[in-house]
Each structure stands twice: as structure tokens, then as C-alpha cells.
Length: 118
Figure 1 (tube, helix red, strand yellow):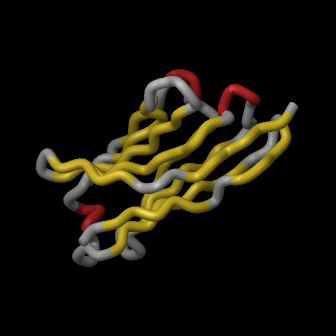
Figure 2: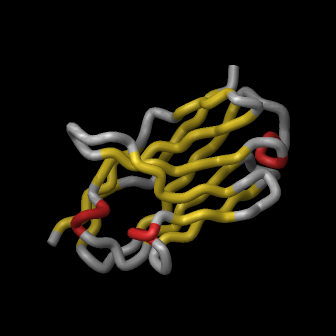
């Protein structure tokens, strides 16, 4: 069974940086070469919003709110996707979730909390 595990969240001051990781387990090696990967974030009482995506071929997408500050990348050999977050702002505070998208199937991780303090 394919599972996703996020890590790397925590408490950081405004202007600081964090790197989130999302590791896929229970799957064939190099699943990231056939799956699209996404990072979403959600605050209590709101919908889950797309932050960044990386396609199976490596094309990248960023929400306007994080362009120039966040970088998505992946290591196909480690089945891991990363979200490097810099110049963090209080409005980046949220639970961050990783999603694997493959052949119309979506698999979510449990999320990791990011809190940016002023």
C-alpha cells in the first residue's frame, strides 16, 4: 500500500526557512517518474490550497503567493519530494500536505505543521 509521510515542519521566525520532505513508501522504486506530486496547505476552517506541484517530467507550478520564495524539487531515487521555503511570513502558517497523483488516483499524507511567528 502506497503511503506518504511528510516531515520538516516546525516553528520558525518571520524571514526564516524550512525544508519539508515527503517520502513515498510501499511503491515501486522511481514512482515519482510516473506520478505528479503536489504540496497543499490548510488552515483551520478553510479549504486546502495548492501551493506547488512538480510533474512526473519535472515541470513545476507555484501559487502566486509563494513564487520566488518556495522551491519544489524531487529525488526520484529516494522517492522523495521537497518543498524549500524561504522568507517565511506569518500567512504561511498552516498544515502542509503532500499529495501523489497518478492515473486519476490521489493519495495524501498526514501533513506537517508550519508555524511562522512574528
